[in-house]
Image 1 (tube, rainbow, N blue to C red):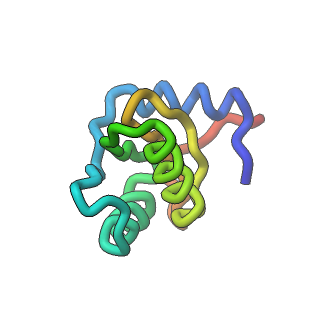
Image 2: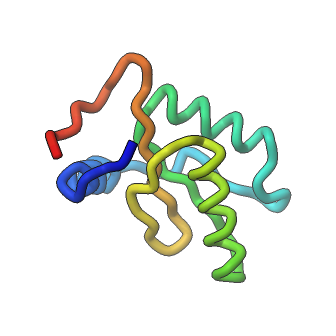
Length: 98
């Protein structure tokens, strides 16, 4: 599934008021963190994940791994915040047509 620009703009507007629901700690990306990301996406569809890291390359690699493992769409990255979207079985958000 690939999001169109119109859909990304819609999701960015919805995500603006959200707070990060997943905060990566000192252990980094673990199976437990990925389980929480999966659960949060199933429940909310649109979430923010905070990935604190000193190294830019490491931060981008972790974010890419989260997107890949969660089978989600990367909507936006602002600093250390990653915005993810994945449609749930019972949809909560109605995306505009492409």
